[in-house]
Amino acid sequence: MSPNYKFIKISTIASILGISVGAVFGALLRILLGIIFGTYCEEPELYEGSWLIWKASSGDPGNVGSGTSAFCVTTSGISDQYGGALFVDLPANVLGCFLMGFLQSGKVLNIPSDVNLAFLSATSKAQKWSSLHLGLKTGFCGALTTFSSWNTQMVVMLNGSTAEHGSQGMSVLFGYGIGLQVALAAYASGMHAAMFFHRRVNKAHAMEEDMVEDQKQSAAQMMITQPSDHYKFYSGLPDFERHFLQDILDEKEVEAIRMEFPNVIEAIERWKNSTFFHRKRNFDFRKDLRDLECALICEEDIEMDRLESLIKVADQNSWDVTSLREYIEAKVDMTSTVRKQTKYFGISLAAVLLLVLFILFMIGLNSGDENDEGEKELGINQMLCISGIFAPFGALLRWKLSGLNYGTYLGDRYRWFPFGTFVANITACVIAIALQTALTNLTGEPEENFTWNKLMLKGIQGGFAGSLSTVSTFASETVGMFSALPKHGYAYIYSVGSLVASCIVSTLIYSIWLVNEDD
Image (cartoon, rainbow, N blue to C red):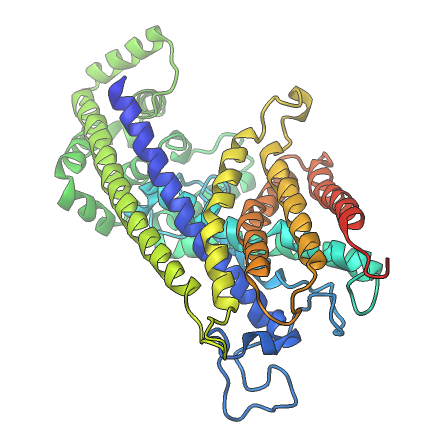
């Protein structure tokens, strides 16, 4: 029991560290994109002297954003600028959803490959680095996109109490619609980009896909219901075995494995040579060969009598089953070695990065010029540091809640429903709108300046609540429902239902708790 406990504990630590690092970078990038694409253009005085915005000497003083690194594309919906439907976090959501689609596995992309990151080479060690996958998808993409901040801006605009143009119902409607459609489109674009790179960096996969497509077309033209090709006899095998046994594997990939794990290549070569004749000529024996390989390599469930008969066929035809078993054992050892290497390297790297980030945050919290009274002036740098500190906690809670997805908590009828993501997004929306209400209700503090009260509220709102919610996973789940269950309306129920539920709950909280200055 102790080895299993140790393995689970180390894997969990690696996952926590990976998600935490990814969440910090994702949340900070989201806030930076919000500033650069919109917030700065509304209140440039708040970012004077900040390293986030550089100014060119040729900028037009009368044109906000001219001659700077800012792009005036989005608005907060409460200033005198129109266009709140293009909400502040729209650029971050688009980028995060695209990256989420780009980081998908071969299984999700519905391509004949078992790679975890389709855009990378199948032989890359990063394919076995599970904490990296979690850090990129759950941590970085999940925190880069935000459901709560998007919803909060829509609710504030709908209420209109603090907006220059009052209630903006039509802009809110378009804001929800644009946000949803663009997120789904960005995710789909990322998936297609991943498939494009997959073919470029995995030549064997591309060759195999082309071969299968040609065989299907030939079979259709000849009205053959069962094609004479031999690809179908390998379709159940993992990528490496499938390509190696069909002689379509890139020789560089073989040599890369041979250099580090020669016993793996030697064993499968002996097996391949002993079965070469029957792979090419005898249809019946090729079927037995395929069943034997799937039974041993893939550990498919097979009746004992059938397995014994396959072993007899192997003995009669001099198939080197001993070498096949040696290959399976060597591959297990190779996989374990690579995973240990990536696991411990991932833990070390993530721990160092977190330590460095924490030190930088502590320095950032105490940075700033002194005012006339000798006190440190607070600004956007402190808000970024606070957001970065709280971001991992939101992402880790979302990761924990994801265990509730597709369960039987609501009964078998609703197993399609990603309950965990829904709870994470709704909870984050409640927290974000409550903090927004508190920010609006703050009295006795200068509106144009940063204070520790405002910084803490904004930091928790953007860091914790922003990372607890996610649009990238939300888009991934919605697209998955469209693909897996096209005849049902589940994707519409989940996506539109999440938006409607979050809007109603948040509007009630904001309307009830908001202090009316006229009272």
